[in-house]
Amino acid sequence: MMQRRLTAILSADVAGYTGLMEVDEAGTLERLKVNRDRIFDPLVAAQGGRVVKLMGDGNVASIFLDRARTSAFYAVGMILSEV
Image (cartoon, rainbow, N blue to C red; front, side, top):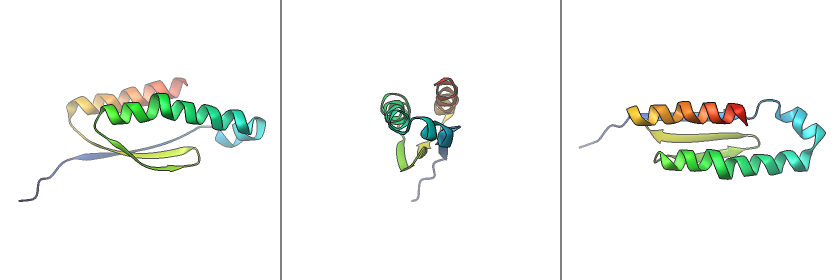
């Protein structure tokens, strides 16, 4: 018997990435890595999700969805919008 689960796909990228790279390439790449390691990846993992793909300044993650995890997506968006 096949079990169905609702999965949310989260796609995120850095606003203004090209401009940041033009001003400080090394610093931008370092901040991007730190933010992924400290914020994005742990939040996704804490919700039982996984990062599917990294591409430059973008990420794609999948998370099996339930009510509690819906609030996690909101939290990710709010935290990352302030970084």
